[in-house]
Amino acid sequence: MAEHPAYPVGLRLTGRRVVVLGGGQVAQRRLPALIAAGADIVLVSPRATPSVEAMADAGEIAWRRRPYRDGDLADAWYALIATSDHDANTRASAEAAAHRVWCVRSDDADAATAWTPATGHSEGVTVAVLTTDARGRDPRHTAAVRDAVVEGLRDGTLVAPHHRTRTPGVALVGGGPGDPDLITVRGRRLLAEADVVIADRLGPRDLLAELPPHVEVIDAAKIPYGRYMAQEAINNALIEHAKQGRSVVRLKGGDPYVFGRGMEELQALAEAGIPCTVVPGISSSISVPGAAGIPVTHRGVAHEFTVVSGHVAPDDERSLVDWPSLARLTGTLVILMGVDKIGRIAETLVAHGKSPDTPVALVQEGTTAAQRRVDATLATVAETVRAQDVRPPAVIVVGPVVAVGPPAAE
Ligand SMILES: C[S@@+](CC[C@H](N)C(=O)[O-])C[C@H]1O[C@@H](n2cnc3c(N)ncnc32)[C@H](O)[C@@H]1O
Image 1 (cartoon, rainbow, N blue to C red):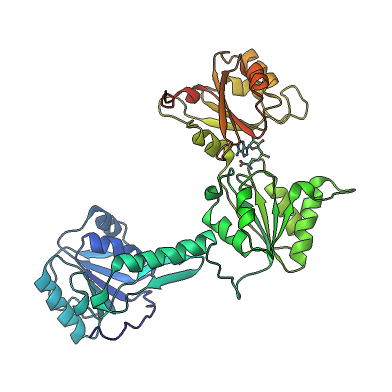
Image 2 (spheres, helix red, strand yellow):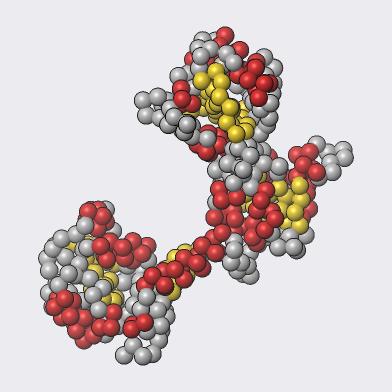
């Protein structure tokens, strides 16, 4: 029977009866996809794993708490036979054959009339990998092929351009803090499909070197802006390239909406009628402290963390930050763009009640090869920044979490 390859097909199971025999690990692994397919699932099994039981409790499957008996497959379109009783499985597959119900068997692939492929998903596509014949079955190999295809599509190393659904427009992609591995899979895929990439100085610059030669890479900091403000010039560049029908990625550091001016760009694009999608990114405000061994919260130490911009000094009339209130908080303060003003910020926090001994860490160029961490207190931070020549970009963390990490190795 297994000399011919299996014929691949996609079953459309919405509202159609699927019978699952056995409530163990096999059912637990297969049920989520059957539920996602909208099948009308009946589980027949005296016992079930806690996860399968939870699916029954949630009403996602109907559970008959008893062993298989003849007739259970009568209304089924498809059956998954996975009890621990080989005889019951054999009787069930005989019943399935009598009713012309396709069935998979967990204990005997040769006796099954269907095989479950190794599946994965990537942006509206299901990748399903089947072994060619039962005797040569190597489930790890099929899973590895599936992983290679899905991961390749996700991280952009396998490029399959969308011909029907790909619409020209702009993707505002949060690139994460700098390590090229810390961009999202969606961001990486969009980058791989882009015709034009307009990139900030911060973020995963190394990824730009991997782009194919036809991709135009524009350094946002170098866009000539003549009579325009820099941001307007960037907005105009996005609009102009998108209007030419090109797929444009605006690659930003961290998350586009955390001090990233993402909404301004989105609004400008909306006004110009350009479709825009926003891909969140891992913000430096959390990831950079984490990369330096600092958790922004820690049980029993900090129940809140507050992310603020330090680009203007506390006494600057443009500042929107309520520094006196921040000084009263007991949790963690994460300051971005604060290196230049940290002296004034520390003074203000102390003047409004924070202890001068409060630990402070500055993490420069976090998650990159040049990452460095410099520790201080509110009393010493201004001098430390000068003495140690700490430079932007750096994330500054203020609070007791700075001191909770494991002791540094000798
Ligand atoms: C304009 S803000 C953009 C923040 C970004 N949207 C985010 O979510 O991470 C730039 C500031 O983020 C911080 N920053 C971003 N990437 C960093 C990194 N790799 N290491 C240290 N600080 C970083 C610095 O404080 C820098 O001045």
